[in-house]
Amino acid sequence: MTYLDAAGWTQRGESGQSVVALGGGHGLSATLRALRHITRDLTGVVTVADDGGSSGRLRQEMDVLPPGDLRMALASLCEDTEWGLTWRDVMQLRLRTTGPLDGHALGNLLITGLWQLLDDPVAGLDWVGRLLGAQGRVLPMAVDPIDIEADLEDEGRRYTVSGQSRVAVAPGRVTHVRIHPERPRVPDAVTTAIDGADWVVLGPGSWYTSVIPHLLVPDIHRALVTTNAHRALILNLSPQRGETDRMTTADHIRVLREHAPDLKLDVVIADPTATDDIDDLILAAEELGARVVQRQVRTGDGAPHHDPLRLAAALRDAFDGFLGEVGRAESWL
Image 1 (spheres, one colour):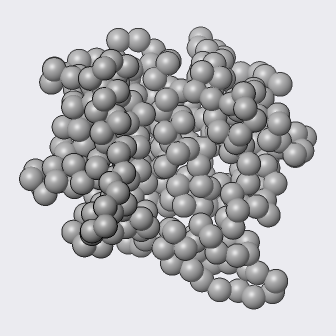
Image 2 (cartoon, rainbow, N blue to C red):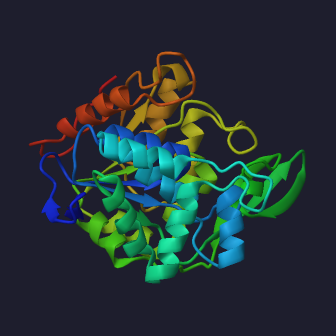
């Protein structure tokens, strides 16, 4: 796999295996910040269903992909130099005014402007990556904005909610999610990256609105099922209020299976402090062909955030456990 460095040259990743990480928002950002310690042959594939905040406003007003999660992924891959870190801060800067620009992230406006100029969402993101000296590449899940629709149950009442921002806070238990359009157009670069990867990583993140949507896009689903890459799943560190607060740790894996029964996994990474029933988790993982890797990946302050270095160490252990192996690696508990 190749990428554009800060000078615009195309080169192959210098070390490590080829890895594709799929997700959105803070979860994908945490994964990318960890993976950049392992490899430079790295691609982030980002959901495009956000319909709230600055992204939602730009999506509605300009008929573009929601740029916010894409911006966060790019910022996570910036080079550790004064240049890269300064442009990262510029991208993340949130405008505070009394006018219509209030609340917009400056990076969202920059990305949207490049899309308008180039009329190509992938090329626009590549240009931002060059500006940041990104150590990897960021791609949209699809070139069509996606709407998420969820069926919920709440104290005997069944109802349907549309829109990522509303699904995330709707009361009750999510029973199923769908996307519209059902067959969004996927950039060739996404399926090519998945096909050529050594590892594909899903999660952590909002389960129904950032993780599962990737499995509902037919072209991505097919690529994930048919790739020769190993597949890893990173579990969340806490339930998400209104979306998964009625789910056990093992339920997260079973929900994944319900939406993609033909998907197999190799590794599930879980923090022991966030695992409610390890035996049930192992059973759920085995149903998808995976082993559980238990590692402390939480930040030292106890907050439900993944520490980049600890997560990198857990991922490296998982990856190295399969190097030179014929068949499946042992559990690391």
